[in-house]
Amino acid sequence: MLGRKRAKTAEHEDRVVGDEEILAAAKTLLASDGLIAITPQRLAAAAGVPADRFDVEAVAAQAYRETAVAEIAEVRRTVLANPSPVEQMRALLSWLSTAPEDSDGVRLEAWALARHNPGLRSAVQDGEAAWHGLVASVIRRGARSGEFPQADADDIAAHVISLIDGINAYQLIGYRSDFDRMRLLTRVVQAELGMIWGPKLADALS
Image (cartoon, rainbow, N blue to C red; front, side):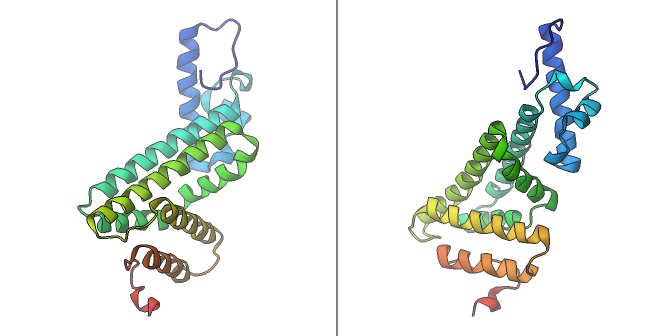
């Protein structure tokens, strides 16, 4: 069951259907207004059930998990459609550094709220591990083909992802210019992978 508090008179079949409806309502709230919108009152109103029929923290965690899994799967398909590791990395960096503002905002909300929600913390950690795995797999593929240097793919992936998380957080609050943020990422990508990346930024590296 998906964070549903047991109703004494409810039949099992009704509980399963209700869980699906509640989760769908939570995912709709998340997509429109972020994780902070998944409150007992708003979720109850959106799902059309009393607030004492579900565990809002568990539902929020599952809504975030399923949304993150779907997003990562979509990006993976897009990235792997490119023929070479270099092009895969370019596609991956382009998506990560220009992800929709609402996607970055939800991730930041998730990190903050996860401090007090163990289920959400687990979902966030799994999501970060999936992103790390995708970046590291492209790096390893490039190292095998000779397009990237032989190096610790996990360390490089962690470096790149942590920087992207930081510059995306900067973007959300309007700190530093787009050019400055991309220049920081471009320098790291060049130093770690030996590739020039970033629109109109090659001259900034000289």
